[in-house]
Image 1: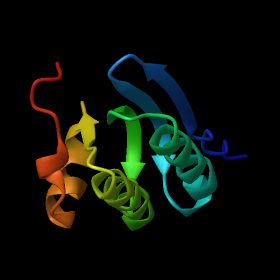
Image 2: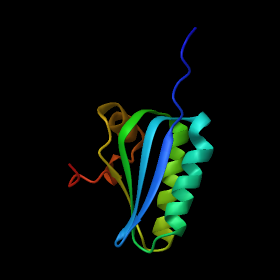
Image 3: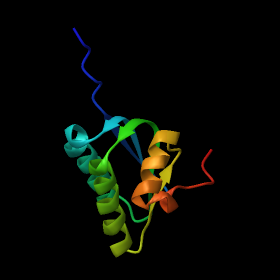
Image 4: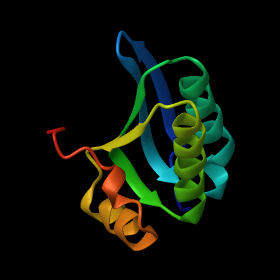
Length: 109
């Protein structure tokens, strides 16, 4: 019997200069509701930057790109910004293909 893929994890942590969102697992249609809720919470809960840590994301499709793009638009409308931190090589390639790799924070280790 095949093991079911692990559910994605989305953790939101407010901070003094913005909010951090850590995503993990596969970010696809099955994870959409959880990811949207986490990003919406981060957007609503900060007057600063939202940093999304992608270091534990193993897969991302267009659904994930859409979730990130929506959060980015919502933040930009309020004069804030979205940064994508520590994407894996696979996720970085997806971001490059989608034309949003410029949102990656190169200063993040």
